[in-house]
Structure formats: C-alpha cells, structure tokens
Image (cartoon, rainbow, N blue to C red; front, top):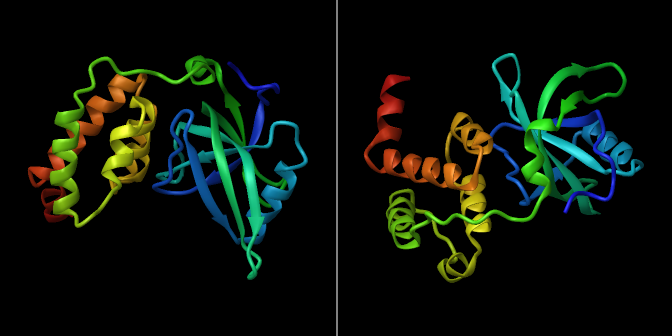
Length: 209
C-alpha cells in the first residue's frame, strides 16, 4: 500500500555518514544544529513530512538515499529535537539545490523503487541458523550484544534491515546494503560482510590505510 500523499519532486536532505534508512524501517534522530531545526520546522508544514536521509560521498552526496516520514518528535530540555522517521521510499538524487533554505534540498526520482511502497518482503532463502551463527561470532569478536529472543521473533525483513542499519560497517558497505535490489540480495551481502570481517577483513583494511 502506497502513501496517502503524493511523492514530491523535491525534498529536504539530511546528509549523515553511516546512517541509512532501509525500506519500511524506522530511524531515530537527534537534531540540534539550527539549519536542521529549521528543516524540521519546514518539513512539518508539508503534507508529506518527508526528510531525505543520504550519505555524503566524496565531495558530494550518494546517488541513492531514503525518504523518511516524520512520525514522532519531541523537544529535550536543552533544545534538541528527537524524532523518528519511518521509511517511505528510496530515491535517486538528481540535482541539489542550495540557497532556498539554510539546508540542502534535492530534486529526486522515485521511479526505480516502486517495490518500497508495497508490503514487507520475505526471504525464502534465509537460513536463520547460519545467519545467527555468523552473527554470534561477529558480536563476540566486536564485544557487541543484542536481544537474541527479539531477533528470533523478528520477521525476515525487520531482522535483515535492522542488522544492515545497526552493525558497524563502513559507510560504503552500508550504502551497498541500502542499494541492494531485493531483501535476499541484501541478506547475501550482509552475510558476506560479516564473513569478511570474521576472516580479518577489518584488520586488513586498517593495514592498508
């Protein structure tokens, strides 16, 4: 089921390295810079309430990001805004526009991501025992923890997308996960990244830098 509003041709952009919003997922954000507080104020005045999450890349921005709808927000005592974005659709970024507002806006194309507007995906090839086995080794190696009971109860898409968003992969790896055409493609890449890290990929990258 698609959104109850028209997808706009231009949206506010929030560039943030390492932060990706997978289809149908949610992303919590803390906003405190004046330009982004203005962005939130302006966004809340629109019918769509969309903010485009996108990663910086080189001297510009990544080609693909995700628009999230502001579904909750609150103000802290020190003036920061805490908000929650719910993914609506990925987009391909066209030109960026500056000068209209203190934040960057982008002309976006939604046409490649019609599947994002539908219901959740299933992954018939998901082997949960294999994934959880890799994940336990990865968590132990990186001294991380997770709620295994909650993970076991999660639907395929929620599990794969949350891991893709939360695990400490590089910005480039997170972008590749975001751009995966299907949930099964994302799961295959996710497991490949975990296996690579377990075989010393992280250390190898550090030696090359």
